[in-house]
Length: 154
Image (cartoon, rainbow, N blue to C red; front, side, top):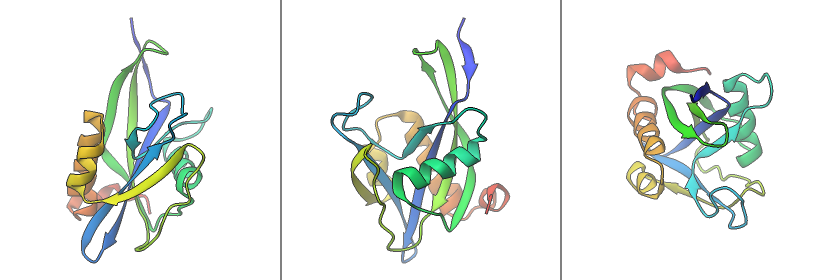
């Protein structure tokens, strides 16, 4: 029987260009063993004993160099079956707001980045769970709904 596991995080990064949110997608390098060439938002593994929010901030710094101007726990958990561990992986989603005009400093894991509208970003994401997470961040967090007030970490 598959076990439950929560050892990963995702971070959907956005910034505002005027009053319009743009979303950051990163392209995995072609020689990356897992999902080469895939466009994604920040995804990473937690270190032993690390809290999910702390891991999300660490991955954000490692993969982009960003220190966010706003940070939220998004009201969404992406789940999928992970055959490496015979486990159902529950992946909490965080939202991070970058400063206007800020560009990421990419890690060796990624070779390109794009700032896109929610619709454009959604079309580039492969996984339905990530598209749903983007929709929720776009509507609830970047859209300034009441959930943003209650889920803001800083």
